[in-house]
Each structure stands twice: as structure tokens, then as C-alpha cells.
Length: 147
Figure (cartoon, rainbow, N blue to C red):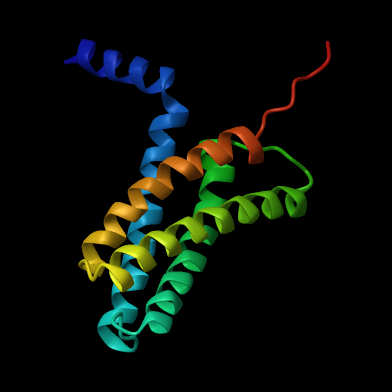
């Protein structure tokens, strides 16, 4: 049992960033989906294109805010002192993926009349991958220390 735990720990340490990102991605997705589903099952009608996008945007705001804090502290362990600039880059990248999400939902739900709940899950998978790439390559870039 001790060997299995050690092996698991070694794998975790080797892939810590990706594993933590996936965990935070799943939690962000849960925040997004929970917010979306609460809205469309209570106050907004997903068959109305505007209300569909309102639900989408509100769920994005909740998920992006959760994701920024969690990614900064847990995944990328950012020490950047310029939090405003970092947050601006993060939200800017997330706005791009929000637009991708809105496009996916508009085309598949509004135009093609596919199931909005299923398409929201599929869209979120695409968004998780894009968000990781943006976060890793543009937002939480580790600065090299001069020796």
C-alpha cells in the first residue's frame, strides 16, 4: 500500500499543475453549470435567445471569478504583484472563450435546436482546454529569475 501511495504521489508531483487545473476546471464547470441550470429552471427561458445568453453570461461571471482565484493560488501559484494586470489578462482571455461558448450555444441551441443542457456540457469541455492554454501561455507566465 505504501508503494502505491508513493507512486501516486510521484505521479501527482510530476503532473501537479495539470491535475490541479483539471480539478479546478471541473469545479469551475460545476459552478458554471449550477448557475446556468438554476437560472434556466427558475427565472430564464433557454428557448428565448436573449435569456439563453443572459444565463450563459451570468454563469460565466461566477465561474470565471472562482477560476481566477483558484488558478492564481492553487494551479499556477502566481506571485505576480500586479494583480490588476494579471486579472485583466485572465478576464480578457476568459471573455474570448465566453464568446466561443456563446457562439457554440447560439449555433447548436438557437439555430440547430439541440438540447441546451447537453450542449452546455460539451461547450464547457472545449472551454476548459482553451482556458488552460490561455492561462498557461498568456496569463500566469512564470518569469525567469536572473542569476
